[in-house]
Length: 435
Image (cartoon, rainbow, N blue to C red; front, side, top):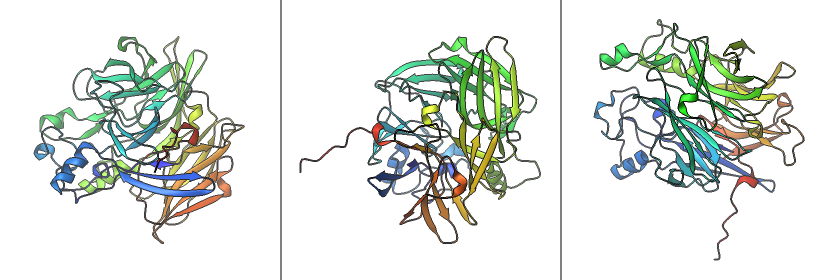
């Protein structure tokens, strides 16, 4: 079980934002009835430069980047997501950054992933790995035309596809989705306010008069073959899953109806916390490839996010999703784990307890699993009252029964972002020393 998140090594310059912290991976390895814990910073280029300097070289995203290093105005921390592809972990950054390859056993940073060649583009916070083919689908975006690029890395880790995707302007997409034959890209109406940019300021603005657009492209399709579908305006941080049903593509995601804080919330810190908190709900879109029509509907009114599914079902019809529940505090805290049964149209929530907050919780399939939900849900949980972090293990078929296992961690694991599960069978063989 591996989770990424921010952990600043040096005192940040200016106001600190969660996205500024240096990426640190926290991993718990289960083997033969025992558990071991390890953490390591991701040795990004910025991390190494600050190590040499012995101090912070960057201000954060809340400050004017004009005085930051000219070759990296915003510090790429690789602190957002962690996935497993081609025998290695890969750490990704929320604004689209360099993908860092990590040894899955030792958490050692092996360098920037170039996909077997001279790949110099970046990758968004979230890429998707199809365990059936071993392929990884990803996108990059930037404030210059064509504004988006879409790519595929094969099971061998080499780049097999990379094409430009034309957008009407600079956007801020965060996630994508895949099916067996298609990828779904997003053009959403939350992006930098051009009027603020003219005045030399950065401000994210939600343009409610614009539709949300979803671009469906064949997995190895050309950029000019994307078929765009309009839907009601919203923002999406994280997709749940997508699959093909006849002429339709079905996509589930956590939909944010109002991603911009209300005007009455003033002050930089208050507005930052309001942006971070999220107010999202499980939602379904159906895109008809023949008629071009979109159907959409809400599936739940609870505030849940950071969804996970059985990775072996990613891109295929799936019945279950596991989302963390977001509490009512003014910042982002996960106070429970909600299991969605999409077939029975029901949900069940395990509450972590007063003063206890969890992490994104992937599903660890049971060896020789008999069903999609035959396995375990794994999450770091920190008890703020006792200052104690533990790993909580739940039965994926019955989360409300409470933990079937707990592993106390001998140090605090700070709250963080995304996580993944890697089965022993996926890992390369252990290197046995001759000494």
